[in-house]
Length: 161
Image (cartoon, rainbow, N blue to C red; front, top):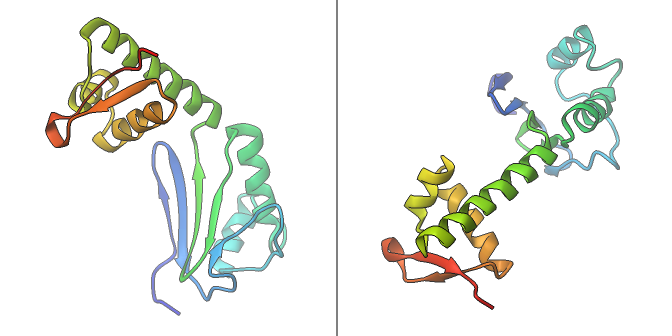
């Protein structure tokens, strides 16, 4: 077993718990169909102390229920060499609304300016390059916009069909 220390990382949009592991599944855990087992007695004890776990394995169910009820998201749990629990603090419905607003902003920008490139999209949406690229690619797949050019010369305009 790896000597990686157990840690809890808290970000503004998610909480990640990691600890060394002797994996049983070597994959993501399906929270709808799993057999509970204790991974780390120290973390289990802390989760019991703060009310997130009552018995071995109940932390899975509690975390799943809390995430679904209050955050409208699903935790991701991986049983690999590092046991990792990733809990999104951002409501999935809010993410969808934000994504739709960003798509509308891109369409409005193209209507006003005739086209948009990734750099203009980053300024417009205050997002990172990869996020804008993913958003533009999704809009291409849904036939809302077309891509022209390559590399830095790439720009996007509306599908006029």
